[in-house]
Image 1 (cartoon, rainbow, N blue to C red):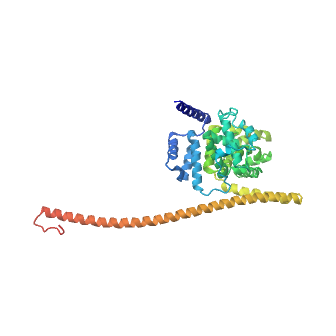
Image 2 (cartoon, one colour; image 1 turned 120 degrees about the vertical axis):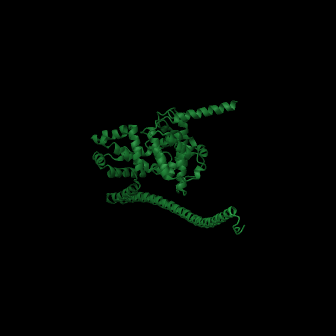
Length: 432
């Protein structure tokens, strides 16, 4: 009886924690039929080994993700990604069990502890100092800092881990953090040199130039670069400033489409608030509006932003602007009045960055080649299967033709037999 009481108490605590965790307003409430679609997908036998149609998944995510199933749906989308990309990138971390990592000490402990109280300070699950929420969050960040020692711990990571932890258990959240960092490409923006973050700010500026030229000119006129307002958007995936319901939808799309979603959301937010931003005429009021007022957008505006993200494709532009950034950096080095040693240092850093980029591209090429080989093998199997099916079809057609002839003969014999029975003077049918 005591054991049963303990189990009951644990179950009640789990339910209470789940209610606490999911204490946020959804921006796209799921209709009953949409929830039913997701429940059917999630309960599919052998789900982790079945490739689902991408268009159907886009449609399902677009119609909404039920809050109480969100964590399971993120895991499902991660499974689908791994099925479609069976060759993992070289940068995958060591497969050290989570419990083993928790037994170790981290040099990042102080930085993590300081940020715990700053992460969702008003949310009931994280508000208690060193309560259940903060302790679980600490465990995840500590384990990741030990797993990925190049990144260790970086400000912003606590918000990403915190969002995951609101929707799933501690170890599951850790595994999904690994997935976002390594498979979805978030990790590169947290590297110590922050070069990738600089490139991202340049890419966002160029996208503004392409899509909202008047807003771009207005910001340039007041010397406002994206790093003044957008760096926290990228490092916390909007979680430090925007409503949780909106952030959860951004995560839905990142699990579906990858890290370029952050650019699309930023571009949509700035574009949809362009008339209000253009009304401000100095640096302080513009930055204050983007940092403070813009995140408090209403439900209608949030839904509009999410819809625009589904309709935008900027992958080619992002690649082009990354190359453009490196070319401009080289030109700056060549034209600047630096000493030979300074120039050599800068060239070495640029070369190092380009080498990393080349390795990343080579890795992508290898993955693509692997996928091509896999697809070719699948096509070959399908062609063989098609040939066998054609042969089987031909055999069935011949069999059908023979059966039709037999049926026709039986009909004739039956007709003759009927005629004889009605007139016994007629000669007997042959074969009787």
